[in-house]
Image 1 (tube, one colour):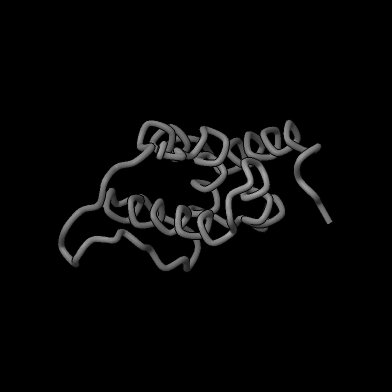
Image 2: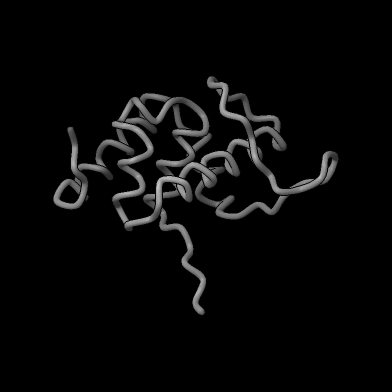
Length: 113
């Protein structure tokens, strides 16, 4: 069975959600609709990224409980670190605009209420 890796778009949006607030662009449900992943899978990805950010000492402005899947004191994998590390260097507004532009590309897929 092939591994279903997260896309650049999903990872960038999950990074924003892990750092700030997914409600800024419609919630994590919007992310799940891009590739048809379950909301639960997206929520776990956001929590994994939050754990990665915490491990790297990168400040987050939300209360998302991180999920590394590792025992206390051990570091998790740096999955998609190339995308995450790019995103965290951007000012919040620039990252938010990138996220909104990505969602705009998928507007035919995403049901925005």
